[in-house]
Image (cartoon, rainbow, N blue to C red; front, side):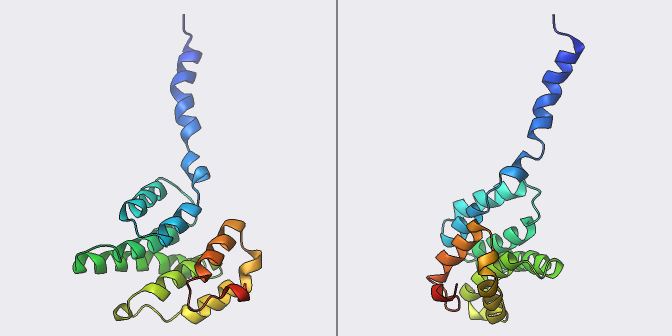
Length: 161
């Protein structure tokens, strides 16, 4: 016969054990893999995965991914709307945490690749300098992302890292 305690434990434990799990298991490398590619489904999958988390970088990651996604959409009105939404998220994250080098790196990647017509290019030099000067103190996943991106970047040079 099942006791009340056992029944309660069986019903509540799965809920408790899953709480916060997505925040602990989110891998930021997924963001950088999606940013490096051009697969809309992959971007949407990472955005969905990110939506389930409570990590501190959530807004910055969403912003960068949305701006990247905008470049892959086909309807001009939708592209602009998604880009603006992403820009607001990323810029708010940077305003709230101006010393976060990762956020500046995300913005640098977007600004270097955004069409000139969007007028989103004014922080390239400052962001590049910040990333370069802080490179050695970054977490390993981020150092790898910066190093990989520097191979195609106009302002970040592998030799400067």
